[in-house]
Image 1 (cartoon, rainbow, N blue to C red):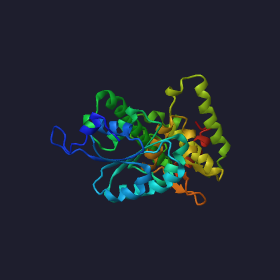
Image 2 (image 1 turned 180 degrees about the horizontal axis):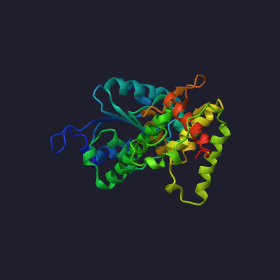
Image 3 (image 1 turned 90 degrees about the vertical axis):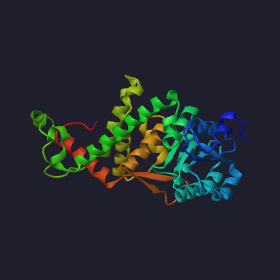
Image 4 (image 1 turned 120 degrees about the horizontal axis):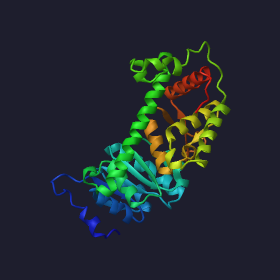
Length: 319
């Protein structure tokens, strides 16, 4: 039972400004951490459902804005039984979902819950939970500055970087758009001969080992510089998925997280953003319902092929 005074206070339907607090339903055997995060984020706790009752009781809730699921320590059987019900309820009432999970549970959880309305946080701290709930739409304007500012700034940069990658790949699908927009506008036109690749006379085969070498070279940088200064998960995942496609090999969500070489929560957030940007696609494993594969979209595939041909024509290495 959740007994914290702060959490009980979250049960009030309106805040001090008269605004309705979003309704949050928790699925957890011990909902103390999630409940405290809900209170700090300005939400209204509806109920905390233990896992053994969740599958049957989720359908009883028709007014829910956010579902907070505490999956850490829960066995795969219960996840398989409850998470589809969570997904069904979230879609029915247009609710957001926040799932706290372990790294080992990534494939099971993402086989049931995935998309723009799902936040996945691995081994989260209280700050992680509050930030995720804030992103889910709970009292973002009322978050404590110590919790809000660093996270919001990091997420702003993340969104900008994903947008940049999506725009770059879209440009690469067209031969005349191989240069950045600022060059196309003529602002630095004198650099066009130096950096532009000539149109390829014919498409050359792309060796997946060249892609793998680029990934290994990027990993070698970490021997000489702090890894935090070199984070580039979006591009690393694009390289990994493209190489896997050339090798006719499937890539699970957990495997793609490893390729990103960042914290699992960050990797999952990037996968979600890249999917939302139309670069990644999730495909169910036809032989294992507890796993899903990630693949490049047609847009991303065309962009990567154009990029590789462009650097080859220019005599450069994939980076």
